[in-house]
Amino acid sequence: MAQRLYYSWQQLDKDIIDIIKLIKNYNIEVVFGFPRGGLIPAVMLSNYLNIPLVTKYSDFKYTASNKVLIVDDISDSGNTMLSIKDIGTYKTVSLYIKNGTKFIPNIYCHKCDDDIWVQFPWETKESLAKKDNTFENVKTGL
Image (cartoon, rainbow, N blue to C red):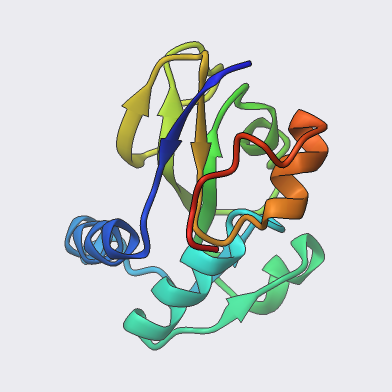
């Protein structure tokens, strides 16, 4: 089983502020978060930036210029971000990337080894247990 790295709400708050500082000149008009992991940071960025959040890939045409910020929690294999096609101008953000990812976002906050399992605070014991087939290894205050 992979080693776990626990990511806290406090770290998320800090990372969101850091991301905002880095994207201030991007002129983003809309934020999209990949379900499930990208939604929470995308909502936070949408709120801080006071710009719309879209929750469906098909809604990118919402903005005329398509200046979209695409958010995910982690670029693990990179396949999720690589699935982006034909949406105009966009920038990508991930909280984490893994060393072996095939996609490096425009902005990322942390990097980790491929054998690390990053546990985000919005993941439930049930979702983690489904991956592990056990509840024994979940030691958190969720």
